[in-house]
Image 1 (cartoon, rainbow, N blue to C red):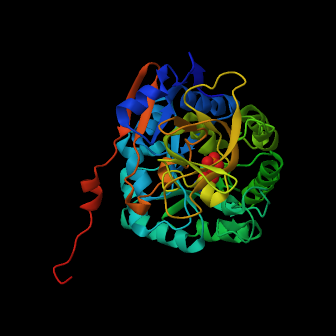
Image 2 (tube, helix red, strand yellow):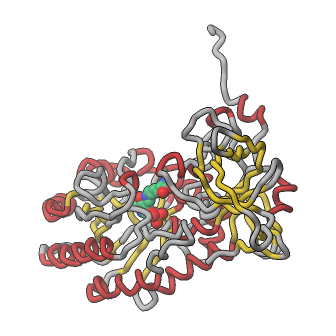
Length: 421
Ligand code: LLP
């Protein structure tokens, strides 16, 4: 459920007409709903009630500081994967003890930044990383709390580019080698092992792969404890999918997920962390765009928008489906026709949808891409020298620009031309 509904014939973001935002900031833009963000965070928080837990929002999904502060003020922690994300989370007021640091290639500099600034734990992904982490921590006179990310060799049954839990993926250490790696970790003075981390992929629409992975984590917890290690925290990653196509069967709800976590891991008395990104932000955001031209091609009509693949890359990159709806509500029973919905970028890949049934649209009409809150703005680029598009946050009847559109000069003047050119 989200808070983007038609009212009086106009799409609203909570109590704000989307057309009003377009008039104020221009198109294209992203708009997020505070109520939806908070609702999704609380669903997870409540689903784990009864277990000691922390929901660490995977901020890679949507990392604007206004979003981070909204979630942080509600009690969320953050999962960060770079020094930049760590700094952004801290700038948004998230305390270090609520930040977990994931990622397969943390540099010594990034590790130092997090150790100096304060960190809940590092999710370590390899033995070389463990050695560097221990050395950096010792150089600062600290001991770094860690979990080790295990790769459970489970098929997440999702798009190949976002599956992470098979042995051929670059993530984590093979679960079969876990006992040896934990014993190596125990020998390093700058780190303290406190738990296990696992994350098998994103946009999972079935609980079975999660359950298979968590069962392996449960078994490993018992083995490692028998080996004498302290395992008191389990980080279960993110990955629960969202319904992109409203016609499809909906993925499991956070409550079903929470019940499964309790069933597979509850008896271990560990503190639980989860790292949802998409489920918190995905349906809390729209990308709004304007029709520039309607062009009649050979046997098809193209809807040419002012938004493009550089603004929302998911369709080009993952063949992702996003619902596209007109901002002005079509009359009941209005005639529909198929359109190829495209952007102005000079690539055929700049296609959002082919032969999508939509009501008849004309130049200057506004359309909204639903489910664009996660991995939308954060993955955008300036390809074709198109400035990054603004982000807007709505709360009730208020809205504010939370990242403004840069001017052309700001974009262009980042280049420098050496005098010898
Ligand atoms: N934790 C770790 C260690 C991760 O790598 C990820 C996502 C998450 C948590 C959050 O997963 P989520 O709950 O959002 O599924 N750009 C792609 C998705 C990439 C996901 C990368 N890792 C897309 O647009 O579909």
